Amino acid sequence: PTYLRTATVLGWSAKAVDTLARRCNLEEFIATDATDMNSLGSQEMWDENFFATKSNSGMVSSLMHGPAFLINTEGEERAGEAKSLIHVKSALHATGDWNARRNAMDRLLSITSRDDDGNPDGIALYEDGVTVVSDRDPRTGRWESDIKTHNWGVPVELLPWHPREDRPFGSSRISRPIISIQKRALKAIIRMDGHMDVWSFPQLIL
Image (cartoon, rainbow, N blue to C red):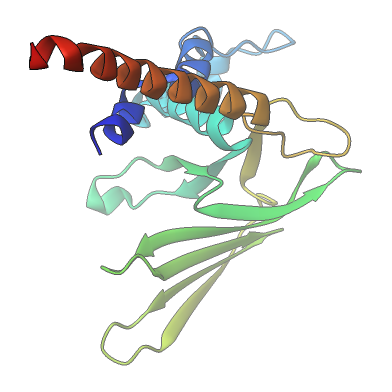
């Protein structure tokens, strides 16, 4: 058991993600024309959503799973929220359909909450001009839905790592070669510890 616990100290796969994530930092938005980005509310959105932190979170999620998703929703200003909220969802909590002709999402299904057992009890479906929010009543188990219409299309942007024509959602930075290298390194560490213990037995006996 001691040798098996040694496996937890080797973090090469994490290093493959974190090293690149630290080099990818969003600093500002720049318009291609003479438009003043602040006049469009970019600074307000940046400050109220702590977007520098959220963009970094989305980058880490995309490096780990391939895709991450940025979702734009309306905030409840009376509850103290920002007027425009931006959420980051990893591939563990959201999935959708990609439209290769428009280079945009057709729809996205997002898990908004889970119960104590980890099962989804809140979901949101984002489609073109329609958002459907559903919650499950913990007492009855019945689902209740609220449908809202808007003029903002599908308020979702895909944030992929290493997208390709046949994989528009990208792929994980933790690839099979990296997993193989880490497994072989773990075996080497376990063998090395075992050999050191075996060769120290004669000294202990003497």
